Image (cartoon, rainbow, N blue to C red; front, side, top):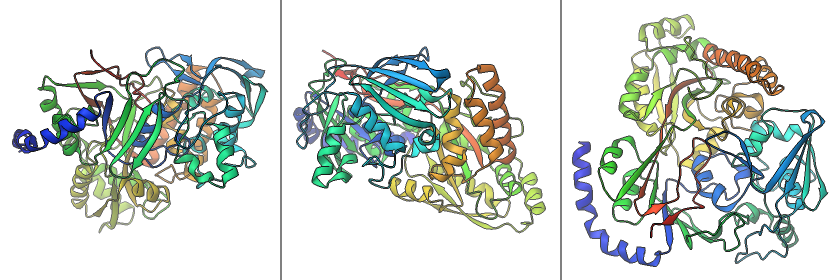
Length: 536
C-alpha cells in the first residue's frame, strides 16, 4: 500500500508544477520551509513547543551563550565572555558591542543592544515588578519548570556592557539553561514603546530580536514571512526571505517538496524516507537527537494515582509492535527516560516488558479485575520522539482492550492540545521531549519535577518530594560522578513509580532540496537557518 501511494503521488502533483514554478520565481533569493504547525507565540520565553521553537528561536533571536554540539563546551554569542564568582553564585557576562535590534514596519530602534536589554529580558521571568511579568498569561514554562525563576536573586547592570546574575545558590545546570533556545535577549526599548502605547500584548506576537531574520507577516494556517536582517552581527545572511509554509499534513509536505514549493520539510515520516532518499534532487539528513517519547498518566486522577494501575497498563503495551508499526527503524525502544547517549544513562530492568497476563493480575490486585474506561490523548503532529501518535494510540488501545480496559482516543489541534494537557484535562497522553541541552537534568526537572507540575508542563501531574531532592542534590554539585549517582536513583524511581512509561528515542530526519546548503541538524535544540544558502 505504501509503495502504491508513493508511486501515485508524483502523478497527482503534475498539475501543480506550473503554478508552483511561478511561486518559486518570486522566491528566487528565498527559502521555503514546510512547517507542521502554527507557532503558539513569537517569543521563545513563553513556550516549550518544539514546532514553535524551530520556527522562531534561532531565526529571530540570539542568546548570551550556546553549547557546541560536538564538544559540549560553552561558546560565546551575545556575551563574549563570562566570569564565575562567589562559589558559583555570581556569573558576570561581558556583552558584545554593536549588535543591532531589528528594524521592522512597527519598530525602529535608536540604539544597539546593551545591559538594559539583558536585565529586562531575564527580569521579566522572575521579577513581579517588571512591567511585562504579568503580560499574556504570565507563564514562562521552561524557566518555571526548571526553577530558574526561583534561582535568580537579581540581574544587575554593572555598566552598559556588563551584567551580573546573582543566584540564591550555585547550580550546575545554570549555564546550560542560559544556553537553551528559550533564554533569548529581547529589546527593552521596544517593550517601553509598546507600554507607552498600551499595546504590551503585541510584544510576544510582533517580535523584535537580534537574529539573522526579522519578522514581516503571519497568516494563520498559511504562512509566516521573514526578511533578512541586514545588520546581523555574526555574518551576512544569504537569503533575502525565509517563508514558513504551514502544512499540517505530512504527505502534503512531501508533495510540496516534489513540486519545489518547499526547500525543506519538517519531520518526514519513516514510511517516506526510502522514497525521499531514492531521489537525486532531495537530501535527507539524520541526527541521533536527544529525546524521549512516552506515555504519561495523570497521577492526580483515579485510578492513575495508584502506581499498581500504572504498572498494569504499562505491562499491557507491546512496545516491539509500536517500534515496527510507528518507527520503522527510525528509533530505539527506551530502557530509561534518558537516551543511551546521555552520560547519566542507566538501563532500568524494572521497566515493564510486554506481559498481558501480568497486567491482568496487577489490575485485579488493584481492584479493577473488570477493567475501566479511560482517555488516551494523542498529539496531532509528527515529532522526532513520536512520528505517528495516532497510530501509536490505536496500537495501545488494542492492547488495553485485551486486558479489559477501554481507551477512548482524544485529539485536538496542536496548540489547543498543548493548552489542555497543561491544564491536566487528560487521563493519559502520548507526548515526548527533545532536549534543549546535553545536561541530564533537562530530562528530569522540566518533565517530572514539582515545579514543572505547578507550571503545567508536567503531563504526569506527578510531584514527589523525594524525587525533587535527588534533582536538587545533583544540581548542587559539579562533580560528574556524584551527579551520576543521583540521576541513577532518579531513573530507578521513575521505573518504580511509572508516572510515565518511556517508549522510544527517535532519530531526527530532515529533507531538503539538494541545491540548499548550510543547514545542519543538531543533537539538541531547535533548527537554525542562519547559514542556509543556495548552491552557486
